[in-house]
Length: 428
Image (tube, rainbow, N blue to C red; front, side):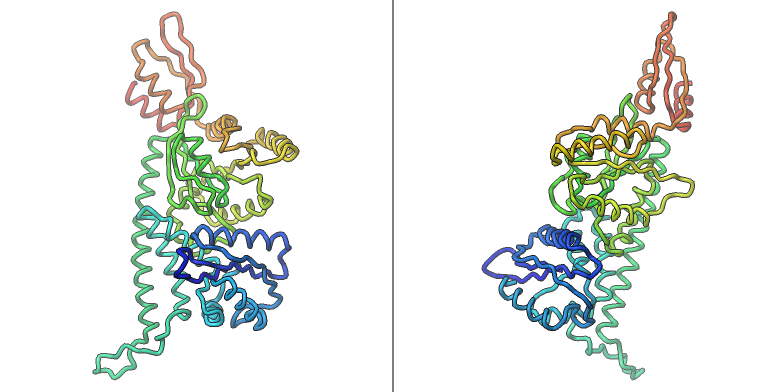
């Protein structure tokens, strides 16, 4: 959790970051979770003055920590002038004890999402997640809970308490937002159907936040999507068409990053966006292979993927992209490249550096091989059918081409059945 305190003499909000360490955690995992929480705080432009792991043997219902530790941390807060989720009561009590704002991990993530959302869809999703989160937390900030709104006078009833009114207003707003997002979902469905008629295979990039998805997206597509060494730099899904080896087109989507214990409010609210992942013909799971926490991050991403529905009859195919090999030392690099090469032959993993471009062509070839399951068709084109030949290169994958003595072009091409039907209607 972060405990920011405004200092009017300094423009930044100062904070300390505390990670409550349960008995089941290893010291290494606790340190990594603390660093991650500090990264979330810095992503909000907070001035992190102190970071501390606090052992919690038995959580205290009122404040999470024991009374002695609360006093000790209060001194730390005062000295700094300034992660498990807290219950509303714990959050309220700690704010009173420390006389500063207390934000738990979910609150930090929601705040980051609120700042980064740029599209209308993104803002709707973030607002829905925040309202769902705040609905159970009215107790922590409202001081007028005993106040009541009077009845009509004719019934003599006690009226509606302020908290009841607030909860009703929030519930009404949530219903409205869900209806708007359902419309977004319907529109996305229409877009997917339109793409299916083209049809181009869809590739979705997923991965732990800051794994390098946007840098890889830019490298594959030649785009300039914002790519920063920052948690949740990407929130809004971006799609581009790319050309794979031998001319096969595909649509690539860059998606929001995942994180350990991603708040359920966000998974539910970003359902419309995450459907792009469920509908994809191939999922590229981008991993920061240079991170000491890479395996744990892989498990966290897979846990979120399990929550995303796949259309009935569709087989989920996942290719791991081991990114940031440029950050490995020579010995680790050699081991990773050797293992990746063996797995690449099975269509399971490719090692790359999205930053330097190393391994990108191998990745393109692997992608093409995994999504290139359209039937092969042989066509014969007259010398005057140059437009038809260009169309085949644009919409399929030409795997063979010869010209006979009469000047006719014999083309072997992989085409989706729907695309072959369009070709025959247009050039038949």
